[in-house]
Length: 552
Image (cartoon, rainbow, N blue to C red; front, side, top):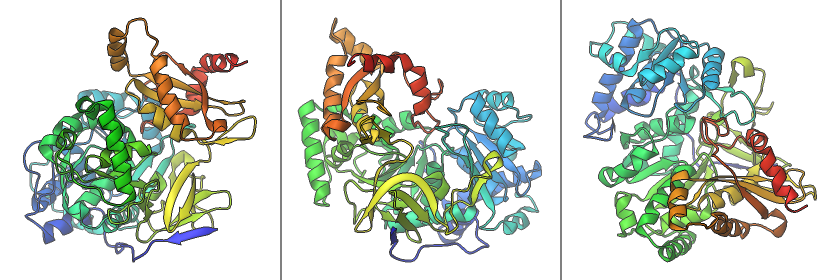
């Protein structure tokens, strides 16, 4: 087996440390430093944040929350969510995040499987969804804020002192692309190691200003929250990407953490400031500069729209089309690809500003080992690896007898860098025996302005095809400007560009624009926006049949 270990010692907290220690240590060592805040005004200082967290923790303690109790939280990223998050963890209770986009069935499964006994929601509508799924009493974020105006409870310090690094901190439910989501157990040590060593890997980057719009219901958002706290970042919390884009010019972040879907959305937004030729030139120049490891600052309108100071974006959660990395580099922003999964508290490898290599997801973070099994599967070992699953999935063992986490992803190691080439369960094998990785093709097609989503089809088929959905608003505008013209004529160009990435045997021979879209609400995307391939194939089986009938 090909293996590589991270260079340098990894941070591993003492058993007496908890995730709340990140907050309290910052308050002690840097009381006047800016920490967390919303989109408006100055963030709380480290000392002020600690006071607020302790007040919320005291309120929860007064309302009966005990060590080990599961607390389900449904809401968008914001100050109230972050305070509640840290307060629950300070008490040694367990955070059970619920995606705002989750379906009723998904919420019911999470509440039942986790055994949550306390519930909190951002809005009355969110509270109603929790109650419909079986919650009895649901606390509103505003209600908790009112409770926490008092002084710290007398028993608070004793409760905080009882929490250990090996204690369960979170039960994070995985995407569930092929069935019911599994509740992944994340300890305080798991999350502390992942966040602190991400900071170590990237040098001084976390000493800057950022805007966090990742959902705190996802492990990536949680890791970045605690990395920002550990690294001393001045952090503005925003509900999501629609709120982030217009706020960038005012917040002027120096770095961000985003998923590729968000980077694509922002790139499409920036197209209004460019013509096609200028975009192509930016991509070409950006890729050249990335290859030379020299991304220069830009004074273009696009750079100004990104805040004027943005230099780095940590990108994780899915693959990123290389042209998108080139686009941002062309305007002075370097994409730092990372790789991880819920079972490793997000971070396995992270690209660093000093050593970024295009096409890879970086080197292992300190304290981490990465191996490649004989069949190409990526294996991970380290103190951030989850102890296992909770509830109905408890019998599933993600780690083998030697401590290796089997990720399900296919990859290669080169000079200590990891390159992800596919996913075991998503590799399509045509009837001719050709292995096809669908994700790079889908990523490239999805970049077209009219395209909302794309799924490649080809398992046990003679050739590869694709289902394409359109962005309804953009498509309506395009049809108005091009009456009588089939949108397929312009989508073909996106398919051709995607095919340029692969061999003839792997290329998309036919595609079909289908009615509707793939969404979380209709059960065709996971809460983290991953394709539910089997569900999509079932929903559009007639369209798939037509694709193959058209070629006989």
